[in-house]
Amino acid sequence: MGRRHILSPPGTLNTITPCAACKLLRRRCAQECPFSPYFSPHEPQKFASVHKVFGASNVSKMLMEVPESQRADAANSLVYEANVRLRDPVYGCMGAISALQHQVQSLQAEVHAVRAELLKYKYREANFIPSSLVALLSSGAVSVAAPPPPPQPPPPPLPTISTSTSSMYTQLTTAADYTTISNDNVSYFG
Image (cartoon, one colour):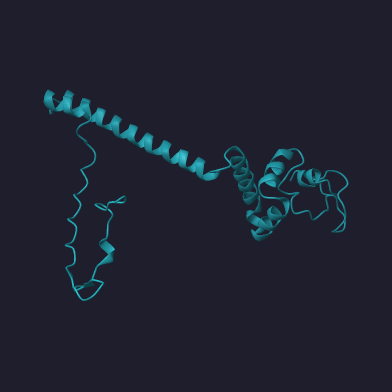
């Protein structure tokens, strides 16, 4: 891709243009160099960031594990991940994903508010909603698009415990259902 191939037997050295990886690692670029198709000599910063985050040996192993038809995509993905990890060393790609998820949620809330506003104006023009209901809709106290969530079911009754004065431990007289245990009313500090 970014390197001129010379018609020569396999295993010979490329003396015209070494790839970005071989330039950075200061080694000779062989004809079968695993990096040359994916790291152009014209963009050395791509391999530099990938090498800084993952290491050349690990990148080579990762690229060799991927089918050859998908290696270019894998190399681009490694470049993206390395650049994000260098910008955000703690969260990396997950920080970018989380920021995008928050942006989607805020845009969905904005779309919901705009739809409610459009509905309010549509019904106001048709005189279907009295002015008191319009004021209630504009205050945001009423949701037009989604019904309220159903109430939570009541907690199951606690199992009965029989106490014995001759035993140090108490035994349960009924089988306990541990799938419904919650920490709602548990005091942590005494």
